Length: 178
Image (cartoon, rainbow, N blue to C red; front, top):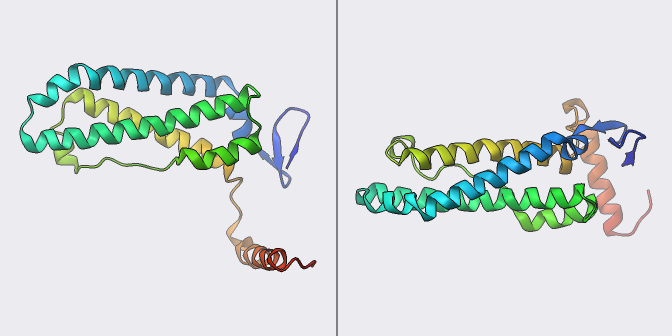
């Protein structure tokens, strides 16, 4: 990995636009959007949402509880990732440190817990917050893959690279030189 004059990181000759995007105004807007969604969701779930959930039929109340827990978990994962990436942008963490810390964040795709028919019976505000969080999650997962998984390789190169990679792992395991 090397850095070009423009600050765009090159990986094996390919330019990483993910790193450029992560340090841009677009990231700042994504960060603000994510933090606002966390605040909005917390305010709803602790206030009006709590009252709404008490008035729901038992089966719907169970779905409400499940979706609200999933929403909270999803948003905490996204907020952790956003805060970590902001620390990288501000120089508090190196990209290498962030890659190590990233394992603690456990960023993973998390869908809705109930079927679409049941989801449609939930309060509109909860439905909206869940949908917003899913869209935010998709954007962050995409940016995460650009930053930490590197550029996709061509399929025609997959076999030689896979074999070469396995041979390198064997050499490292046995401390051999190729």
